[in-house]
Amino acid sequence: MSLDENERFSPYKADGLLVARDQEAHDAMLEKVRKYLDDQREYFEPIVETLTEYEYNGVTHYGAGPNTEYTEIIADHLSQFNGCPLKALKLKQEQQRKYDAGEPWKRPLTEKQIVVFSMGYIFQDAIMGRGSEIALWRKYSDDRMSGGYWYSPDAITNNLSHQVKTTRKSPSTKADRYITIEAVRRSGEVYQKATDELDPTYSVEKGILEKFPFYWDYELQTMYLFDRTESYLTFWWINGGEQATFKLTADADKVATKGKELEDRIRFQRIHQEKGELPPPDSRLSPGDCNAYNEPCPFLSEEPCMSRIPVLDMMSSVQ
Image 1 (cartoon, rainbow, N blue to C red):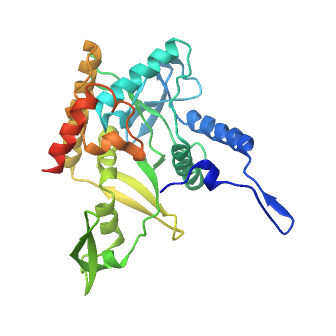
Image 2 (image 1 turned 90 degrees about the horizontal axis):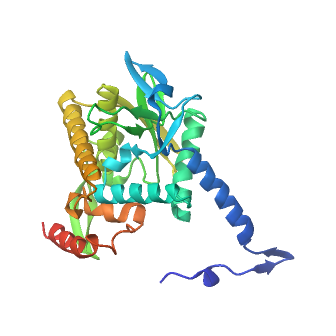
Image 3 (image 1 turned 180 degrees about the vertical axis):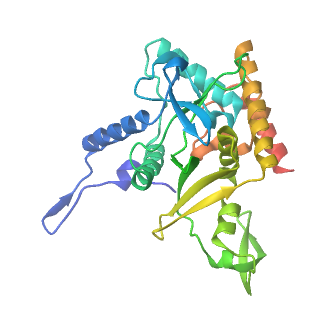
C-alpha cells in the first residue's frame, strides 16, 4: 500500500537538529529543472533556409544552429513515429491549439519524468560534453508526406550517431553467465533460474542485445537517416558504477527494412493528419504504448480508446 504525502513526510528532530521538507524550495528547484529540459527540445518546425549544414561521411545534414529561425508550427520528432500514432497526433493537435490560444502549451512532465529525463541528460553532458546533442531536421519530401521532423543523436563520434544510455541493470549477472532453465511461476510471471552450467555464448554484448530490445529500432532508424550501417552506444551501469562504449554494426538490408517501416508509419500518420482524421487505436505498435514510462496515456478515458483498448488488450493477452 502506498503512503500519502502526510504519511511519507513529517518533520523530525533529534540531537538538536530538525529535518523538515521545504515544499517551496522544492517547487522552485523543480521548475528550474523543467526549464532545463524544455531547453533541450526543439518545439517548432524550422525555416529550412536558416538551418546549419553538417557534413557526416560525405552526407549533408541540416540542423539547428545559432541563426536558425522557426515557424509557429509544432514540429514532429522521430520518437513520435515509434509509438501510438493516435496519441502522437492528438498530443500534437492539443499542443498546437494551446499555443495558438496563448495557453500553457509545453509538454507536461510529472516529477518522476523530470527526474528520469534529467538524469539522462546529466550523464550525457558529463560523458560527451555540454551541447554535444545536435538537433537535426529531416526535410520534407515534395508531397510533405515524409520527412519534416527532428532527430537528435546524443553526440557524433567518428561521423556516426552516438547514443548514451543509463541503466540500473547489472552488465553481468549469474543468470547471464550461466545457462538458465524455466523456473516456477510466481504472481503470474515466469522467473529464470540459473543452473551450474556456464553459457559458452555469454558476453556483456549478448546481454545488452537481449535485455534492451526497445533500443534497436531507434538505432537502426538513425543509421538509416545517416545512410550508414554503424553507430555508437555508451552504457552507464549506475548501480555498479561501470561504463563501456560499443560499436553497433547492422546488416544493410536490416537498416533498409527499418527505414522503409519508418517512412510508411510517417506517411500513415501524415495522411490522417491531412484528412483531419485520427488513426485507429489498432495502429499502436504495442500495448506498452498506452502506459509509456509507467504513465497511463491521457486519452485512455476518451473515445475511441475507452471502448477499443480493453478489447485490443484482451486479444493481445491470449495471443
